[in-house]
Image (cartoon, rainbow, N blue to C red; front, side, top):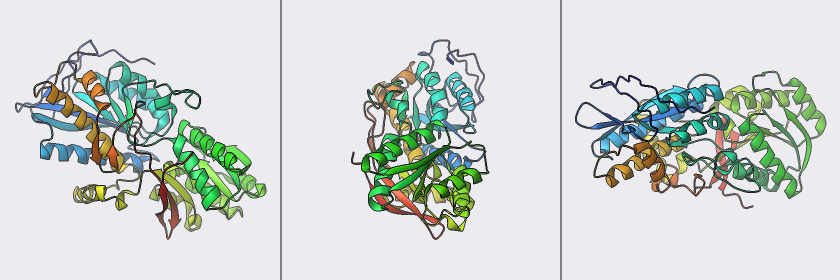
Length: 410
């Protein structure tokens, strides 16, 4: 649904509260706001699941974006500009995400948004942001269609110029997992399960295509309800199929119990998933027999990257209650990309934000390039991250341990 109306609103800023009225034009008045101390306040919105089953990842995204803003303000990265975070909870629901997008659009001081976590939520937000020329940078979306169009396998067409992401896509992640399972783990028979959501079904599809291409056999498929907790019927099908491995397209709240119930049914085989299952909560839900389960995730392990040492130290020093989780480094880099784009626009306009700041920031994002927490951060012609590295993790001694990093060679 198209959400373009900018209604006059009143926004209370933390220091020097000031009434702001959003302009009817989507190109005018988007200049941040006077901070009350002679400078300008620019808000970076954060949309993520801050409550519910996926909140571990969502809170890590919020905190990491907040850390980037704190550092930018401390170092005065953009002269005369103070950055501020506004976080909204999408509860991993597309309808909530769309409402949040409309709220961010209605607030003229918001010049960029970090998020969301879920590809299905992003689908509901993209047009809202694009109509308002408000740039969006996701640290976690991996659905290929978001940047390359619904027919991306045959013809890539970028649907929205305001959408970018620092995570690589399932077009690479699924096949990368298939190559590891077939070539390295030597598993030739797989049972494929997905949760019917945009992320899960897309990931399962790209895995399946590559696995078959390599010579593997899919001995069964199943779709589960993402709200379900009892997977005993599916677990029995897996056991009876003779599968050597299960591939699951979905997220950890279901992947953990699914792994546990499959093994309880007598199929002592590993469950493999994507970045959506790579969270410590997975082990808590899957139990002791999760040892040997596998997950792919975008990029290299943050803890092992020289470029991330300062981020890890600063996050710890920041006193955040939650872990930065799988997407912390990418959320930090997404927020920093917005900051860099704002800096480009301010520098090009004599040290001030122009009246059409949103459009200019979106345009500037295409040429943003810097050395980030996760490595080199820049974007290709589709808004996708140019960093295509991935890592396979295995559960060992109750923790995710990296076992192989590299890029998909298709």
